[in-house]
Picture 1 (cartoon, rainbow, N blue to C red):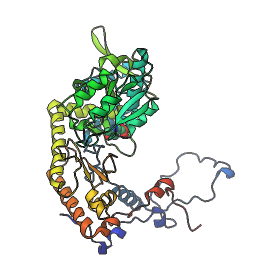
Picture 2 (picture 1 turned 45 degrees about the vertical axis):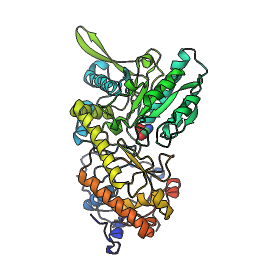
Picture 3 (picture 1 turned 180 degrees about the horizontal axis):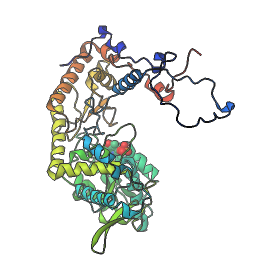
Picture 4 (picture 1 turned 180 degrees about the vertical axis):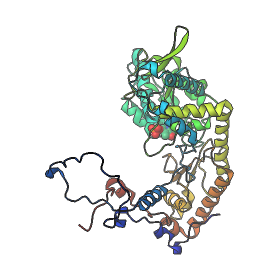
Length: 498
Ligand SMILES: *Cc1c(COP(=O)(O)O)cnc(C)c1O
């Protein structure tokens, strides 16, 4: 196993970066400007000019090294194993970025006449069809810009659907207690109150609790499948039936579609509305807030409510043409224009290059990888739901907590071994949760390395917990006061001398 560099080697301190400003030497320049070949211009009035502009005076190699090293201080999918559960941090093929950067794709404008962008519209139309096929639903809109916005659109469609039927008393949305935080937030933003449905000890939804909550006040249920516990709810058909029987709709948070591609469609199980996270499952580099795409797919009885615009196909003198359209009773525009085209494009590339069999294989491998971790780590980390998982596995650091080590300490220690921490303390229903999603793009060697590290960390938790409490030891900065870093970020260099 690769060892983290020894503390005594001082590597930690050496990797600290000398700020560019502190490298500054008077008169040193990093660029040579050509001779002036235009008439010199007057400077702006004196009171607009700064007397002193403390910019670093450095050479070009110093600048290049500074920014290159700065970029290497980050964890990224391109540099490190990144098993951040629920986020599907898989490797994204670089040629998707090349396609997105092609002038015909990157330089078009949303206000350009539609006849000049027929190719892009056709691509969006085809993508709408593909994601409908993947979700097993009738129609879709690509305009929503993130998973959470897809959820909000879904909730507003539920509202529009019930109001359209004169069904005004439906003010409640049911959400399982393991749900992603965006679900109750979206329901509340849509004007609904939320009733939480507990899970059973096996990690499925409690059917009795669901049945007693299912009333004529219920607008619908929002549920993630597989759940955020990484489990496929074994009663999912029954759950959909219970909700439908009381007149509600079933919303599927499809952010976890990485487990199900080509295996099962949510539509066939009884879902009415589903959003997909294209930036997760369908291969767009993401993190740090975007860009994303969370298109929504709906069953036929909800198609007229879809967010605008949608792309439709029509015939003009025997030729297939494409245009933006607004569904009849649309909930409205989801954003300024038609969605994040660059993300849609990458998803299209991914779906076309993988093909049906490839997508299916990706999900099978994602599930296999997660179960491999489950079976190799279950003797050292507590497994709250002892059954086969889907694309991610949720452990608990409960055993380690007894000895004073928390999930946070384990996560921090992983950084010393070049591994991005898993998702922690989520789902909220699992004590000291460590939610691990290896994805299908990792090799067995990487998974074995992770297993070795996790086992060593568990051993350290028993034998020398102080190593974990103070971790990370080998990163450019060690443990931060995260509350302070968020509330009083220190982002700007200040000239402390003057
Ligand atoms: C990521 C995620 C979301 C939210 O998606 P964003 O694109 O970040 O808004 C919702 N639900 C689940 C289960 C997720 O994993």
